[in-house]
Image (tube, rainbow, N blue to C red; front, side, top):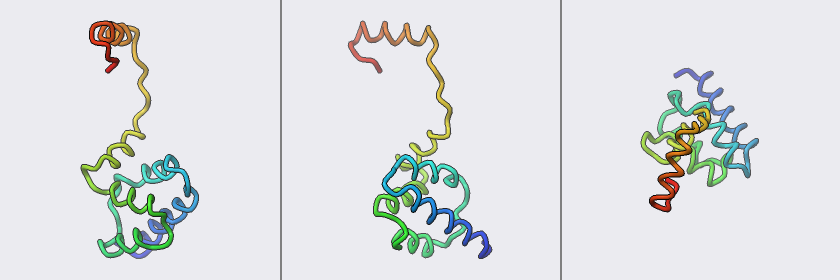
Length: 106
């Protein structure tokens, strides 16, 4: 990848880390925007970013996990992209009937 793209990606992440410091929700929203794009960094550069002073420990760990294909963090971030789908009346009735039978909502 070219240097300009690497710098843009690094700047975005460092600014996102600074703006979202102390808020996991905001950090995940920033990650959501880039999670499915290829990382324009080598493994060494990515690790250097994660271990650098620009990210908190939480941000560093969640960044690493966000780019692992099957991690729970990645799944959670990707689900943030999905729009909320309200339950229909029939679904609510089924849920209520199931609750009456089993005592469990889900």
